[in-house]
Image (cartoon, rainbow, N blue to C red; front, side, top):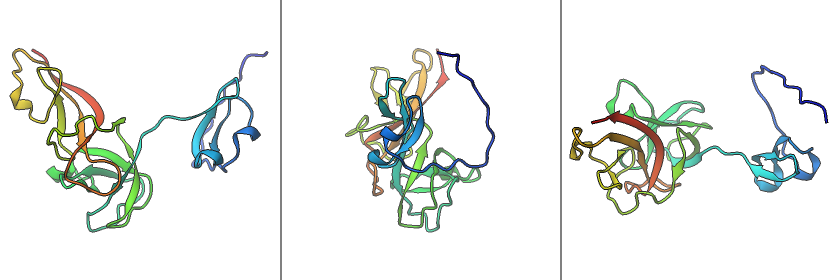
Length: 183
């Protein structure tokens, strides 16, 4: 077998046509029509597997269409609004719209980190709140309960509601870890 040849390509768009896994060679990346048009890679041995990225369905209740490619913030009622660095309630960006999402519609958003379903269920958090490790190894939404003299303050991500319709009850954790301070 010869050494692989690597190439660099610059393009403004890559259009993929959905195909069946059996029609592409091993080592290929393709859109698999048998897996709901998911982006798939095919191993050297011929085993197809979905490529990893985190997309979540959220409801837009902002009153306006959120354009494709624009950053969004999560509101405490579970809906999303366009991100805005001048507005405190809209400055924590959690995703980017993957399509134009009309007001009241549910659309696809690419998250800033992996989504862990049910990680914070029953803790009383609301969507968009920062989530921190607490002193006992669990989670808290109040960093002021941590003593910075004895505890590292680590934000592990942000609270989110379950996928689909907007809800003010957070059950999921969008992972985006950041060390705020160390003792």
